[in-house]
Length: 378
Image 1: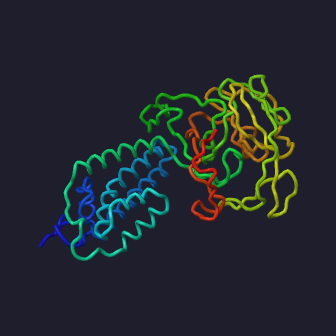
Image 2: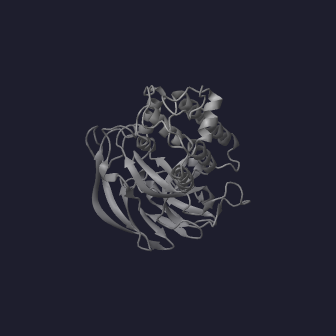
Image 3: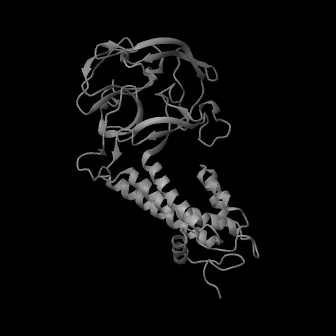
């Protein structure tokens, strides 16, 4: 009797949990051959357990030196052997291994996992029966591992739940953040430093950072860096004594309707009924070095003026582009703002909007904003 997954013909045999996990690792360079439902399900369950445990360890140790990047590294490392296993599982169902590319598509990959876990094997022999580790398989797995680890450490995705950075990013945008833009993460190996080859952000960068008190993720625009003076005069930002130019661009109009998971309503220049046109002024702001971006002005408020202050060493001053609907560095942390943001709290620089959805969930097929797909964040 043949007792392992390298049998030469017919459906792959059922395996117990330990044997399934061992075979998954042992055959991680093997894209040919077949794998049964049990040979697929047990390693998937094991990978999920490892990822959950790693996440719990992370949350238990915060704010210790364990980094979220470490958790992503664990996730990629544990999940990588599942790719060739998934190909072999598809073979057992009589399908081409190229269908495994769907595992890279959000949500579709989850559906494919359920399908592979419950679909019965194709009876009898098929063209995928032969199992033999190949040079192609080894190159694909090693190359994939290097690429995924690189992307894991260099890029982090975020979903935008609020409107404080309109019009640059809006509710429902799914963005990428370069976590190496301001240095390479150390994961606790650089003493007191958080990054190797660390550099400060530039004025005008859109950054994601951890709130200095709550630790929650925020996205804002860097207006001033360490040593700069900054003030606001009737809505105009003044950095180092020079006012940033603001040029009127007409109105920014959006529907007066609930947005995102929080079902928040946008703020408008005038009282606007549900279903109406929510308008506010759109301006182009230009920094001293020529960087241009859009900002919104709803009305004159007390936050439009601020006495001159100097940004302390190791800190940055940030504002939301939706100036009248942003809790930012103008407000003290005790008042619900972010105050000065330590450079060490930076997660990275926002780079692109990958996809965008105006619905209440990222996967809502009725709300996709095609015009925002893969747009650069400026």
